[in-house]
Image (cartoon, rainbow, N blue to C red):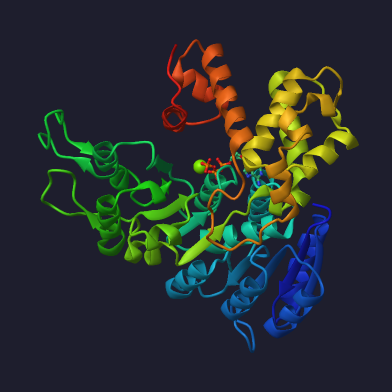
Length: 450
Ligand SMILES: Nc1ncnc2c1ncn2[C@@H]1O[C@H](COP(=O)(O)OP(=O)(O)OP(=O)(O)O)[C@@H](O)[C@H]1O
Ligand SMILES: [Mg+2]
């Protein structure tokens, strides 16, 4: 593939040449070097997309090289070639985040297959997490870095910043990626329902428990469970979740026999957990357990460089869905998009672009196709915009008064409900939300069928 760069590291000159010839024939821009030390030097000077290295090198080992590369830039993919496949080193390398292994003797087809697969995976991630800003690139790097481990991850960010997208990205790039990603919105269920959803129940555990039911922790065994809006759980629920994280086992409601579970937990919240800690609404022990690996999704107003690429992406997507030809976005419209403060973040931008594509009549998205609040930002919104707050890491209070966006969201939900004749499942589909999220929003806004 043109444009993709590969660095081959092997202390045997003959081997380096063989790999280089195969890769170059295929169109990869390939360089070679004899040691881990020289590889790291080269990586400091030039960007390589993939490093293909022998495990046993003179001097620094392939594993040490891998660690060095990941520390400097986890977006560089590493493929290890090993002559003596040992389970121990394989486990060690997988934990550290190696992409793939190749066993010697390496034949041409296998080498090309593995390299192609690695590039396909990287490409897939780039196409789901759009944006070229330093903040978004850092997010992608973190995703790749933590994906290979089984560590608990805590994703923090305002509403609509891509927390769920990140969670899915981590799962699909992890060794668990072939299994289903299970998710629950902790804010959308009552305490009892959430407990039964997470832990399942034994037959007869309560009046309606006619049958035994497996909970999400059990169903997500060997896979990933996404606990969305964890900041909205009660202290009692937090204690139960913490227990599973610590003991790696759980009890069904009404059950007495502990069940072992191997579940990777990814939690997310738009709440300021440190504030909740102070108020005694979030358990400190659970907080520290979760925040071992925090990933912050910054608000869109702090990564304005991404607005254009995201907007174009959403316009193309909406145009395809609507069967319309749209060339792009006019410079005037783009300017308005870049200047706006986006209290609803990327989701709000996505909806604005869908609306523009559906309402627009020309082949270009023009300012008149944009929602009014984007063209005339409320004074409060532009004030925040001028004094853009630095990202404090965990401080996700309502940074921007949400007034106009909430109105917009409400209008969007009402429109979907009317179009679906108040069929919640269908309306949720139209809005691209899960049924539960929509239910939660209906409650939050107090929307009832007239
Ligand atoms: N970097 C991105 N590239 C492309 N699409 C994105 C990006 N970030 C977010 N999106 C899209 O924006 C929408 C909102 O993202 P997501 O649902 O992940 O946000 P969230 O932080 O979980 O929001 P909430 O707190 O409201 O649940 C989704 O449709 C998602 O696909
Ligand atoms: Mg979400």
